[in-house]
Image (tube, rainbow, N blue to C red; front, top):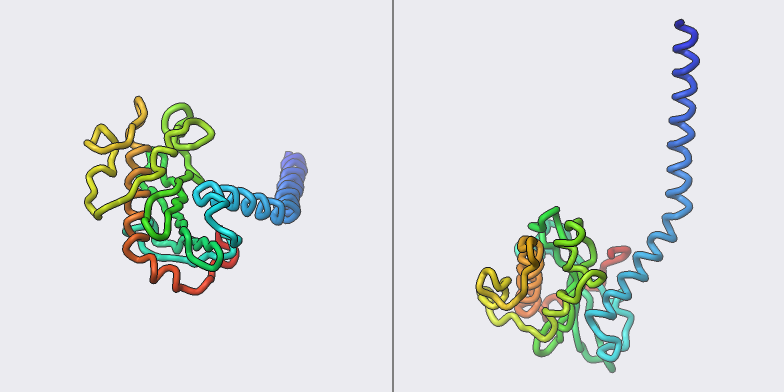
Length: 212
């Protein structure tokens, strides 16, 4: 009996070691590919929130890390990108976190005109919202995210920046108000922050490294 237990235990131990080794090897082999795909997706999102005809520089190479928990929804430093056209700053983009999504944090990317501070575009980069309800913040599911384009935050307390259920100008989703409310709040805070601190943010050194 004891010998049988030892035999089975040994087999399980070997299987566990082989599984761990396989996961480690797979991770090592795919790590560079995953980073490359993340960079491609980031560049695609950046060119969606700052149209290509608004810049002639590589946006992902113009990145500064910015910290401000109140404005960006996290203690972590997040990327801030500067778009230039013929050597002049034409637009900026910043990542922010909506910490109060229905199923957790929602990462967004906001592009803004550098002069008027008008929102050029917003994209949701990551979320865990409920399929068929909260995931309508994703462009893959609906065009709701386009409702930010052309809008400007005029004050920290700009009441228009809320869902219609709360008296604002943005549609909520049937059965899922929490998610759009969280995204609207995050975009409002980040856009206002950039409009008030843009010059200082632009003058920070390019220092993102591998941030994405």
